Image 1: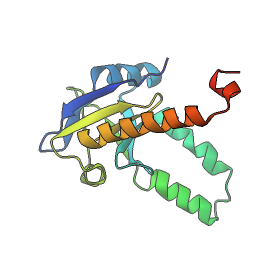
Image 2: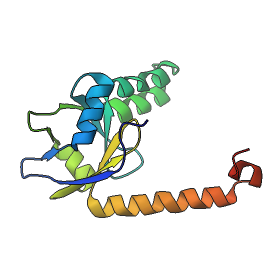
Image 3: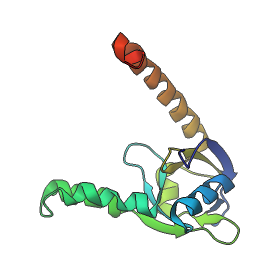
Image 4: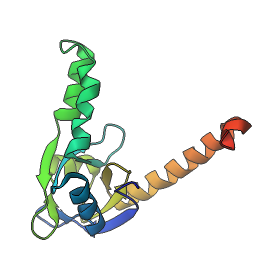
Length: 154
């Protein structure tokens, strides 16, 4: 079963701290044995991605296939690692979001945690609702456009 499921809304305090949903904290500890994860700005959306350390480390596999001196390697390494920010829960289950990630996601006083299976995302609430709707519509359109054999699971 995927560890990070559903959507949860919490408050972002004036210091940039937010409580991670208890189910996500439990899942992370069961997955990794620690309360550590890596935050990074999403490449595709105005949100923050939260990666368990082992899952984040798997990104290295894609980089290892590239020439370390290539522009593609440099772009990918910069996009993945250049803005990465390691965090750990405090005793109250909170994490501190750095200002550059808060700005990237357009966060103010509330955030939505959105499960993505192996990772989760942190969104501004209205943007999260819009993204969820967009994803459902695009998925429906893809399903409608799929050949009949694929649509029924053959």
